[in-house]
Amino acid sequence: MPKSPLRTHTPAGTEILIETLPHVRSCSVGFWVRRGSRHEGPAEEGLAHFLEHTVFKGTESYPTPDELAAATDRLGGHVDAFTGKEVACFYGKVLADQLPELVHLLGDLVTSPRFEAEELVRERGVILEEIAASVDQADDWVSELFYGGFWEGTPLAHPILGRPEQVSAYGSAEARAFFEHTYRAPNLVVAAAGAIEPESFQALLQPVLDRLPKGFTPLPQRAARTQPFLLNVPRKELQQANLVMGFPAPDHRSQDRAAAHLLSHVLGGGMASRLFMELRERRGLCYQVGSYLSPYTDTGALQISASCAPAQLRELVQRTMAECARIRQGGVEADELERAKLQARTSLVFSQESSSSRMFSLAHQAIHQGELRNLDQQMAEIAAVTPEDVLRVAQDLLDPAQVGLSALGTKRGCDIRPQDLVA
Image (cartoon, rainbow, N blue to C red):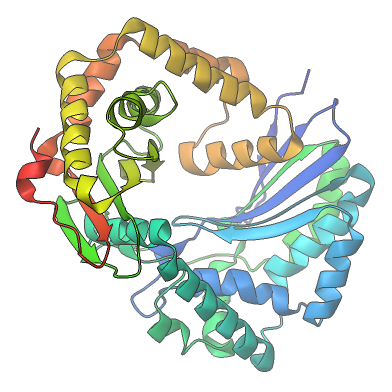
């Protein structure tokens, strides 16, 4: 049995999470920064993501991209990074005997990037290509349109990749300035899981911690409130219409998070879900449809995504709203809820079976939920949800007056109308 995770804080404010897993031979480590795209100022959009890329262009120990790439390959495992709305993460998974090298490499990324001007110019071009590719991907772009409308006027509407006109101007000075006020001891969480001995790991980590700047400037409080909207956008090169629609949902720490998760699963989380059965199996309106929760610190969305032939788009939206209304009025059946609970429990158990998934779970709980809960506690939270809980949450969430919808149409456009959103 795995030991209970160790959770400590350094005097400078860095949080350290360690879970020893006796049954594995791998180690996973993540350096998490409690800053993402929603924490950027108006002149900084895309800088969190820009930084995630550019630290890989050379550090003090690995001065060039070639040297850094070679060091990564020598680990024999996997090293990667990502930027989200509220965090950035640099992580890796290796065999246990490669742990010292992994900690050294990741630690250099988050403390000692060089930001060489010539390298950043090249990487800026790569990021601009990434932005262009995202625009070309209909499912990515319609989701970006949804965020822009649902949280319009708030930092959650910022595209993680940034806007081309701003990214084109970023260089060493902008990267260095953002790095210096962001990558500081109180903003960092280090999570590790696997074949790890806590005392040895903390000794490996200490040189990294010693290099972290102390203190930080508190972020301004920028509430992210949702708003209903309807946006139809034509894209002449598309063969199918794509849409994302969503309702306000609980934040990470809400007491209703488990009920909302189970509601989303019943609605569109599997092949027996309400929307899959109604829209695909019975009506043949689409190939894929699904729902999912996107929780954040102070807000969230229950989102539904689908793509279909343009001529069927309005009917798909109308029947989706009708299905939401049926759940809102009548709740869920006992067997539906039990299937959703089984899926949730299964996902949790599977997440215990690799060092990387345990590392991600530790960091998620500490950063977003503020507490570490063991498997039994998480199972109990799911088991405690009743049909009455789901009905109450559905009545609160699935309000047609609060729905937001972005649709990306074909050369004929798309013509979803306000009356289509009223069940």
